[in-house]
Figure 1: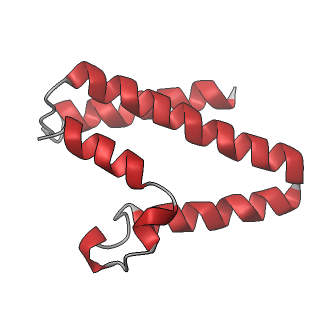
Figure 2 (figure 1 turned 30 degrees about the horizontal axis):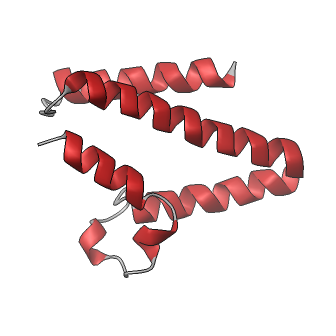
Length: 102
C-alpha cells in the first residue's frame, strides 16, 4: 500500500511540475520514470528501516528526512550549504534531475 501511495504522489508532483509550473524537461518521459524510481527507492529504504528497527527506525527516518531536505535545497538554496551536507544523502538524485531538466 505504501508503494502505491508513494508512486501516486510522485505522479502528481512530476506532472504538476511539468504542466502546472511549466518545468521544461529534455525528456518528459525520463523525468517521470526517474522520479518514480527514486520514489520507489526512498520508500523502500524507509520501509526497511522502520520494519527492522521499529520505533527507533521511525526516529532514524525523521533524521534522514531532515538531512535530505537540507541537502537537496528544500529549506534554503543548495549553494548556501556546506560541502559535506549535499554529499550525505541525495547528490546523485540532484544531478540526475539537473541533467533531465533544462
